[in-house]
Image 1 (cartoon, rainbow, N blue to C red):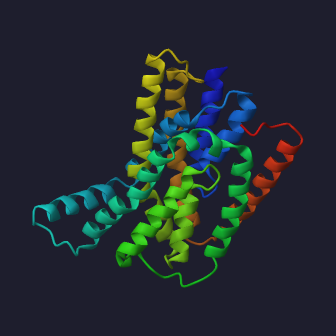
Image 2 (cartoon, rainbow, N blue to C red; image 1 turned 135 degrees about the vertical axis):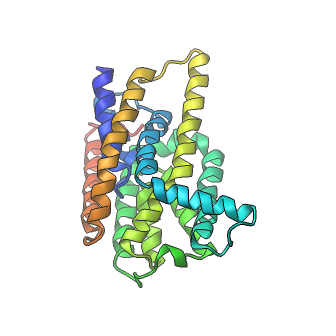
Image 3 (cartoon, rainbow, N blue to C red; image 1 turned 90 degrees about the vertical axis):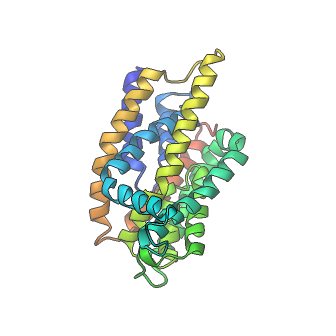
Length: 280
């Protein structure tokens, strides 16, 4: 049974990680139905996110190697620091700092209190509506080569909001990008690039913590085998979603995701009120 659950959760992770609808919220909700009273856990979520982030690395491989190459050459004086790729490399580093610092400071709360489905439902609705506003107001013509240092840090704090299930990492960063005036494709592209250090780091940290927990005699909710399967499944599904989502944002707004988030949030409220779901 755990293997089937792992495949389903891997599919859910792959489908939701890159859409602005919160993968952690969906894993939390679906996990509640598949594993009554057995939350898959924050670390399981972090580990299978390695699969979806690997899909980002594969898809954006040329961009990533180009940015890293230019950044490294600039460090040894062989590239101008004003080069857009060099600046983008520094912006990704700076933008990754908030989620790392806040994630470590509030680790206990993230793994316990903040996983309440009451909070998840509220964040889905509130940040869904904010995303809808961000997608409609302000200028929307800015590209990544015009990003300032302040905007890069602002992107980072928006990403850090995703530490709260229901906010959505991609939703938070895309929301910030739209408020800052970036086009939909550029906001989505930077959301993917900015996620790589943070999510990969979170995933491998989760792997380390899980190994330490198992070594101490604690059992995982889902074993290493099912967790590995879920990670592979999330990679395959995630890659397909990246391709489809980037085509979608070329011509479509985020309205469908806004209404979906609101609907899911309201549904969670109803199920919690009826006692079908338990908040923790």
